[in-house]
Image 1 (cartoon, rainbow over the protein chains, first blue to last red):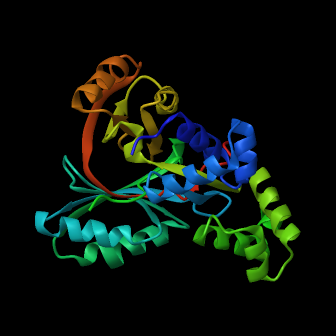
Image 2 (image 1 turned 180 degrees about the vertical axis):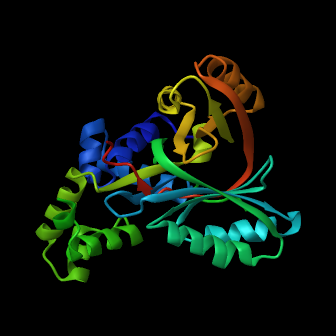
Length: 153
Length: 155
């Protein structure tokens, strides 16, 4: 499914604030309520967009962000990344090229919480050979408006 | 400010929205046993304070740049923060961070394909002052990308 101009305008508006009413969206874009409602339903059903309640990490106390890079045996890589992705503290999980074959991004309330996830869970797999943790002390930019809405089968 | 703003009721409202961001104020009010205007006022206050943002996120594949590169960058002769600021201004860089020790900068670059990524290296990494080396790894498969915490309040 392709996004046309109308879809793009709706998405641009809702990226700022998705709680505005359909009527307000319609008014601002000069289109009908019905069209807005239709397009929103289509966007969500096609998995092209979703709405999320994002919070400020400092205000919520999630001040520790760590990039965790893993070297694992190839045959456990998929299982490890899928299981780790279930943690709500993990916002990004991927199978990658390079020195490491798994990369995770963790956002937690403390270093202790990050360490617990790594030691009690990640390291519990026998195929996980090495774990490198990079604490990200400053976030200069982090785009919030892009996500993986639905995975391909 | 933050202390008052994150009282129990506001935390409960945030939790309700995290669970279902499309929930109406009326529904939230019913669940938490407060009035609809109370919910509306509190959500607005949280949004004004940039603690909460209920927002649409588009699927990464709709961006037209399916190749995600994770880049380690090393800097010399210039503060990494200055290099990071220059990288952050680039549309293709979707995230830029400063790790505690090495590398000096970690960033994400979204590209159309390998050729486009190399163009990024030629046009930007080669031209930004201070970058002495870089290491790229690419995501073969993104299993999860679900940002829920961000820097809403800036500095």
